[in-house]
Length: 318
Image (cartoon, rainbow, N blue to C red; front, side):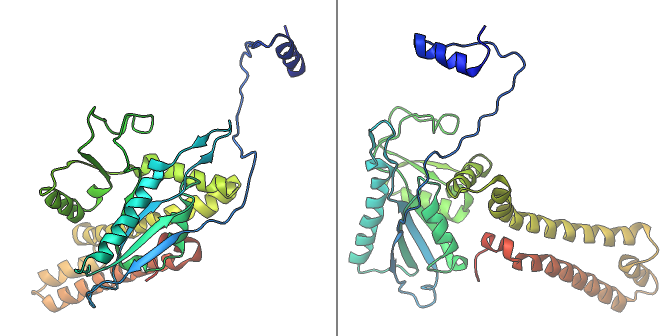
């Protein structure tokens, strides 16, 4: 039996055959790292059409795509990107030209954007989100085009997510429309005059977002601790703060309800006692106002956490 890796490698070199052996209870851990790392400059390309309505022009609709692809393959081939995503880029440019030629201008402003470095982990889109040219607080929708140049066929990317029929010539896969009932209704209404077969789905955040975060962390060379502190924690902190606000609000209501039912002190007891002791509704109203103010102050205290620097990128700038 071969004793060490050197012997195994020599045997492989001599016979040009695998030298598989049973390792028993041995455990192995594989770490994937980038063998080659480059820092290069890429560009997002942005165009803006101002809205025609003075009351609505400050609001923005983003129509976007990414214009990069994977380039040269390690084996000397090339990853052609005509569909992914030359087609989406052309779609954005074509829409920009159509809007410019149309004498009826949109009421809201439209920002046409083609992002770079999408295949490296959505870096161009992340950069825009961190440095928006229009306030995110008044950005009402993002319509993103990706791989719109050909009919869709089953692939490992679709397995387990959606079922692809044999004929997709008249089919439109619209991901994310279910997040907005108004957008969903508008799409269905406008489609009545066109007659496309619509597939309206929602992107699974649990399934997809971790992979995106991992790509970002990997591409910026973050160590595990940095990845947690600079990417994962700031991403989930806003949700944790929101959950804490809701939990604290419910807890405060539970405390007041308990005082009303089973305790002989507190604001809840004050309201019940004032009502039963000669219908002192002035005290009832005063108690309710105090309860509301305390709840408001508790919520404001929790919201103050949103101003902490390490969670700011999870919120849009007002």
